[in-house]
Length: 219
Ligand SMILES: O=P(O)(O)OC[C@H]1O[C@H](OP(=O)(O)OP(=O)(O)O)[C@H](O)[C@@H]1O
Ligand SMILES: O=c1cc[nH]c(=O)[nH]1
Ligand SMILES: [Mg+2]
Image: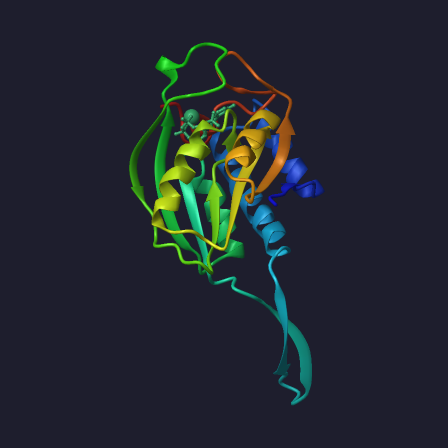
């Protein structure tokens, strides 16, 4: 059964506050996403199995330690644009991850005001082959209606079924989380916050605005 994990580390919540603040400019905003990616990555690692090892220190003495199991069998898929800085941070926790990209865009001009769904325009994608012992991490900072992540997962799973799937978001809505888990009940959803509402235009409220525009400039 999938789980919903809120990363409530005070540092993550402090960074989120900076991201929400409308006065935060592009450079600081992107830096915040990188830092959150790193923190969420460390949180994800807590759920990996470990095994015991012994090493010899320079003093010629044995010391007991641990290693993280299958940390090198990780595929990270980033949804362009807004996921890029978070993935840079996640790579601190998973430096050996294979990386995939999906270029997905909500088609705003066909959106019916108040509708809880968007048409998603998926352009370029490139996904590594997924094996049965891989952990798949799909990153999209904003989980608003869930339309983008569902379109992304639909494409990603054509490249194989992983042992486990994790999605990573800064902010999600309960509506989108339920929508994702209704379709894929085994997914683990990591978020820094769950916000109460979506507005008429499908923006998360209070949210942080348009994550892609704030990180890279209006497009
Ligand atoms: O859950 P949903 O309702 O599908 O919304 C979430 C998506 O919306 C934004 O993408 P956008 O289309 O603005 O692209 P961008 O990242 O390039 O700005 C955001 O980066 C997510 O990918
Ligand atoms: O609030 C939202 C919703 C979708 N995409 C964003 O970047 N922000
Ligand atoms: Mg955007």
